[in-house]
Length: 290
Ligand SMILES: [Zn+2]
Image 1 (spheres, rainbow, N blue to C red):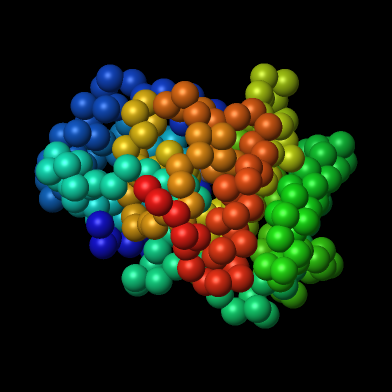
Image 2 (image 1 turned 90 degrees about the horizontal axis):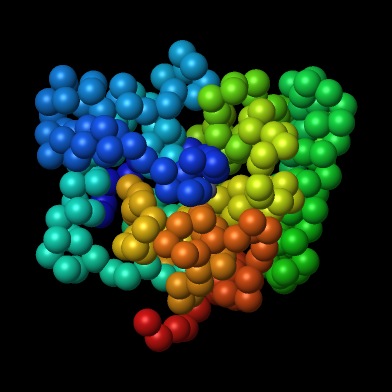
């Protein structure tokens, strides 16, 4: 599992959180994984994907990861590797908390100065001041959950007044087909350092706690991937490279509603806090027995 999806971004979606995938889409994915170099088959697979925003060239795969059209073949080849390992019985059973790996190293905010995060809240992108205030207060509460969980980890979030001086931007993206929210990994290029919320975030039918959604997105910013990432029955696997640092926890903030795991409050569990502390104070995984 060495392929790296350089342009991938993470999306929290309603459909993926209940693990919905149509039979056609799953057939197209299967065919494309088997034939990643066949342009026609790959195109048929791309046609089953949601493009968000429309016309952007960004496609959501597995409900939660966004890749560019050009990255689709490498994503498919990576999936093939994962599938081969599963078939050979050599894939590890998922454990939590799971950290993204880039070039063989943990993808996290390694340097103490990188942990003093600043953000620009782009109020002008929102449809109303009520939605802007809801988003901002949810973000602040979500960020406080993480920083209070491990003060010694040295992570802070400070609001600044311009995008130029900010580590990242928080904005609304008015795309009805979009997911609930999206975030980024520490290794992403700086122009992708954005937290965006979509209309679904404000929907009356949105079941997730809005602060919880922000906690989940901030988990990605800190380098954490989905807990159900690998081999949890009923959950989809994901591409890329990653490593568990604590034992699997179905209730983790980073777990979707699948495989009998997940939660609507998306709260920090003791293993989330433990994994955060190990990574950010030791730079390594916690000691655990699988
Ligand atoms: Zn996510």
